[in-house]
Image (cartoon, rainbow, N blue to C red):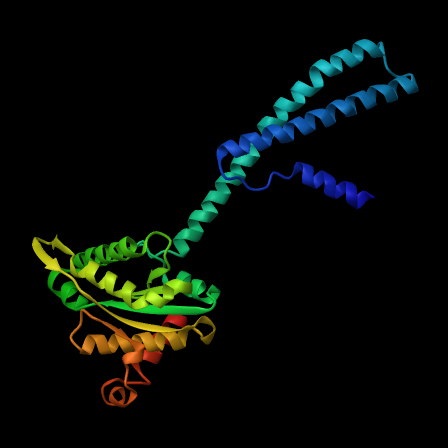
Length: 284
């Protein structure tokens, strides 16, 4: 019995979490009304006990009138203030936690997911998926010729192309210096090549001025498809090999992992080097 009462009291007094300051005030008023009723009932019971014991120094009728006029409004006002202060503190803490969580999962330069958030999302994926790995062509030459500020501007503009094509909330991340990754799942994964090509064209049409010079940017990409349960490393390895082929074939193009010919890759691609090292680096 005691445990049931204890749980009931806890439920009545717990504020929980809030979506807005208005929700805080609404909840505080609701909780304060409960407290006011509870305090009023305690007051009446207390008077009745005093009457029974012959300890009430004044008439019961006027005493109950005073209790009715004072106890509910006073307890309500005090409870509203107290609960509002505590509730607003809980709301602020919740918002701070959400901001911290967002920052911990966001690449601050591009505004896209970071590597950690991307891998977490991949781990939650089920069924058929497509992984597209992009790399900005000749990015090092941009940094060397125009400076790192220009390189940062390029990354920001390219990231905006991803958002424009894929829309807000898409699973797209900056996973390295000039490397980006897109995860498509479900029916959308069947159109991975079309999505990759749309992004490539969007970046290709970029023209902007950096450090007084007009520059254009292109990207290359590798596409790999499979079942999410196979693991990230296997899919990434296929996409990374395809990306390497796109780079060595002239850049500014999309290559699907199905186009890889193992015999030719053995001579031109370090099968046990770059791809596996990249996959293990991302999974770290």
